[in-house]
Image (tube, rainbow, N blue to C red; front, side):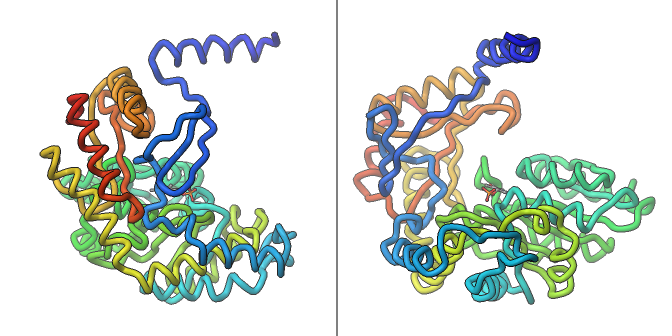
Length: 373
Ligand SMILES: *Cc1c(COP(=O)(O)O)cnc(C)c1O
């Protein structure tokens, strides 16, 4: 063993002791069923909220693009990777997000890692909600801007941070998730919009879990999101003014220095978004299934497709997930550092493809195991 291996072995053992070590489990997915270690389970841990990753038309569109254009983009988009499917996809996303233009990146993570540092620097300040997704924080840190975190959805705290610090900096930006990924609650976009306008602050909202599911109450200056959740594929996007998008094409390093998405991935997203537009009942059904479980278990109703059951310590969440697994239900335990210490949980996600019988099976299993948070 090298010194590095020895040090890391000790670190892994420490994580194991704290029930925080993570390992991979090959998971074969077919519809809402996920098979792990030979055992099928009804999954309540997929972000494929509209079931579009497995839609025959989406698969057909991807297959056709694969045949026409091949497996890969061949270069970054600024070189020769800007194949013809990008323009219609970006136009569609811009229209759906109510913005002038959109730009596709390799993933949602890469979108935030490229966009925030392109727009913000050392003379600037970023205010970020304590619960925003890790990639917004990574982007903020990479930018070198001053970073201040405000308590989750606490506008009073945000206002006091703005009053204390805004004046000393040039540009300012507020970072929020439209739908918070581990709790399923929403950012107060209307109030945030007013606050941003009053203090000359750019508002950036991450719509990874809202796109195609939740209608926004107000428009930020910049939307970002992913094609990997309700859209069912892969890739990330920014939607903003034409000028912001034109600037990012030149300045966002994760855009400039990374290969374009495979053509089939663009084709799948284009078809999936078309279905999303034409079949709004899919989102309604997914939201309805989530709230059926909330009602049955006496949990607060949700405005998204995400329902957390907060259990506390890591071992409690792991034990609950294991008990459900034995009953044919897959609900992955979410632990720190993904969520704050003491709030390990089951994070249940719902899909338009869950049948009523599957929802009943989940309710029965949660009741039988006494899992209610
Ligand atoms: C999943 C997620 C991302 C990252 O998107 P990927 O396309 O999976 O990289 C960004 N923000 C939030 C809030 C997310 O939940």
